[in-house]
Length: 191
Ligand SMILES: Cc1cc2nc3c(=O)[nH]c(=O)nc-3n(C[C@H](O)[C@H](O)[C@H](O)COP(=O)(O)O)c2cc1C
Image (cartoon, rainbow, N blue to C red; front, side, top):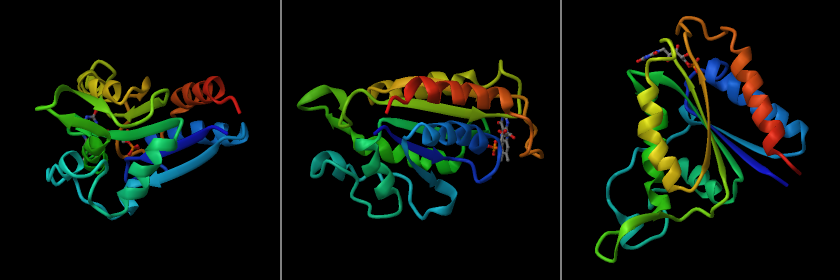
């Protein structure tokens, strides 16, 4: 059975990025996939502490907070949704703190091997969902900056962007991005 994990980076549970992610997960569930959702804003966790225990002593993050299940679950998920609003030209703070913690999924020992590699099994798909107020020409750099890290984890990366969404309107129409999400779900789920 295909396992889908949805990491929700907007504080708005029914905002635009969350509704795009939901279009994917609803379709995935209807096709028989197992879906786990993680609403980051409702979880207690810290950002990466830079302690490097995950590289010197352990093969996972030493912190035992609410992100443990999310980080552990990434090993067995087939498809991972990473959704976030654009805040100040980047992902939300909630998302960035989570994403920094995925540093524990990287093999990094520059003395032994200068090339970092992923501890996650290969063959996973990532769907990066970004929602923003500005026009599509703006903030493309976010994808350029995050793609190398998705590549490092070996993900087959798909991207959905929803643009021109004024932050005062969480109910704004995102049907075209939702259609894209449903299309991806139908093409990726094969239970
Ligand atoms: C604190 C804050 C910062 C924002 N910064 C930006 C920005 O830098 N660029 C932009 O295009 N939109 C910005 N926005 C607008 C949101 O990205 C936009 O409304 C988005 O659709 C919200 O996604 P959500 O509905 O999933 O929460 C900002 C909104 C907030 C609340």
